[in-house]
Image 1 (tube, rainbow, N blue to C red):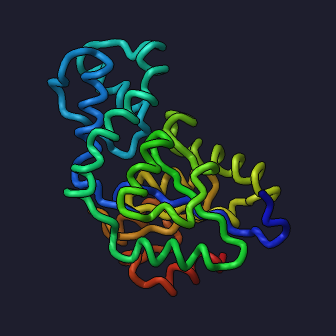
Image 2: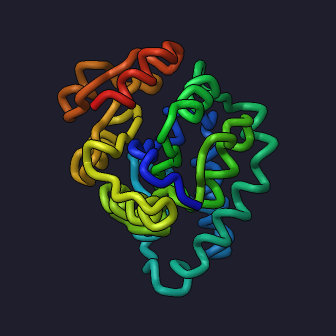
Amino acid sequence: MSLAAKTRIFVLWDVDGTLIDNGGVSKEAYARGFEILTGAPSTQPVVTDGMTDPAIMRTLFERHGLAFSDEPRAALPDVMAAALEALVPRLRERGRAMPGAGQAIAALAAAPGVVQSVLTGNIARNAYAKVAAFGLEAGLDFEVGGYGEDSEVRADLVTAARRKASGKYGTVFSSEDTVLIGDTPRDVEAGRLGGARVVGVCTGKFSEAELRAAGAQTVLRDLRDTAALVRTVVSP
């Protein structure tokens, strides 16, 4: 597929806290995944802190005094996909799409030359499952996203996603052409270090001041002002 010369903006959406509120189901999925991998329930709290799925599971193993060896690492994508799949009904019950998320994705999809995907520490299948649980998948190209299986380092996911998008669409996306939208300082840091413009949104627990201090060039209160979001994305 090619959008030829018209393609000029590559938008990467953070998932948890930006597009959706997972209602705490993500941490339950990691605990379930740990039990599948080890055969024993977790006795330690799951700590996510903006990390990728492999990093989250590795640290959970380490807190239990276990080595996160090649075998559980290789099994992680299938295990985490199965763990979340079993919890999708609970995700729909306890989670929600963030206000304005659907309209924002649709508006950017209608803008000439915009490609949208996601950048998330989740594995690709779980990123899709979370977004699709709330009907937000239309307008997002999941083939060119940045995911936990691409790297443990979140900033590397920007480069991975840009490489996929450039290959698929035949367009070289520069730092000015790549926009990451996220709700945490970790999202902002990933975008900044990965070479993207960053739009912070106060849909999570962090304030405008905190997101700006982390390096976000623009911060929006939420996703409900669709026109402001589109202007921000398409106007470097």
